[in-house]
Image (cartoon, rainbow, N blue to C red; front, top):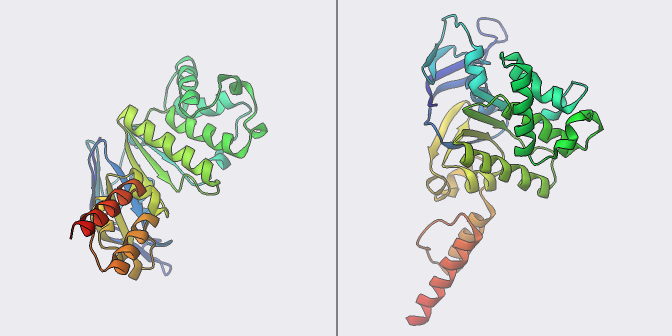
Length: 289
C-alpha cells in the first residue's frame, strides 16, 4: 500500500493562543514495500509525521494519501478504522499499553476490536507470538509476569496480529540493551522481507537507519531537510554534523581515514566489511605506485 504526504502542514492547537507550527510543506512518498527511516532531533517533527500515517492526526494544510484514501485538511473523514487496521503503529515502550489478564487476550484485543472473530483472532495470536520469537507456552501467562523484553515482544505481537500492510516503528528499541536492540531490529527487518511490509522507522540511531532502510528522510524544524538513499544521505556527513546529528560509526571512521591519508575512497561505506575492503584496495593501489 502506497502512502504519500503532499505539502503537509500541521499546527497543534490551531486558532488558539497556544498554536504551534509542527510541520511545514512536508512531502514524502512511501511506495509499497519500502523501508523508510525518519531521523532528526527531538522536536524536528518526526513523531508528528508518524501520526499522520494512520490518521491519528489530520493535516491543517495539504493532504495525505493512504492507499486509495485521501485525507484532506478541513474535511471530515469517515471509517478511519479501515486505515488504522492497515497501518499498525508500535509506539515507544509499547509494553506500557498491555492491560489484559493473559498474553493471548492482549494479542487478540486489536484484531477483535477491528471485527475479527475470537476464533480467528486466536489463530492470529498464535502466529504472531511465533513471529516475535516467543514460545506458545507463554500465551496463558499474565503479561505482567514477563520480563521487560518479553512484554515488549507481546505488545508488538498485538500489532502484528492485526495483519497490517504498513508497520510504523517509533523508537522501537528505546530502553533496550545492545543485544535486545539488535534482536528487535533484526526481527522487524525479517518481517519486513517475509511479509512484504512497508516499514517506517523513526529513530535516533544512524546505524539502524544505514543498515536497514532503503530511503532516509531527515527532518529539521518541522521541514524535510533532505531525503535519499543511505549512501546519498551519508556521503555528505558534514551537513548532518552541522545540524548536530550523528553519522554511523563506520562513516566517521572512513572520514578520519580519508582525512589522515588525504585520500578519497571510491564509495561511501555503510558496513565495516565494505570499509575494510575499500581500505585494503587503497593500500594495494598505493603499493603498485
